[in-house]
Length: 60
Image (cartoon, rainbow, N blue to C red; front, side):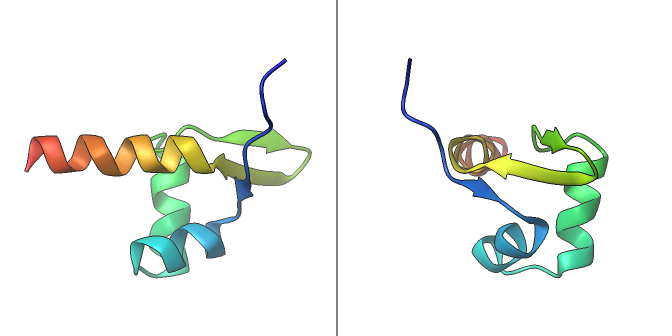
């Protein structure tokens, strides 16, 4: 089994992207970022955020 990835909250995502927490939640809600739901909590795996950032660079 592979190594577990760091799970990021919307606040963590907002800090890494330098955007508001509200915008981070929007990205997560509209499925721009793959999310993992744990009860009422929603998290983003660190590798998924890095992949998303890489894809944004390719589009621009």
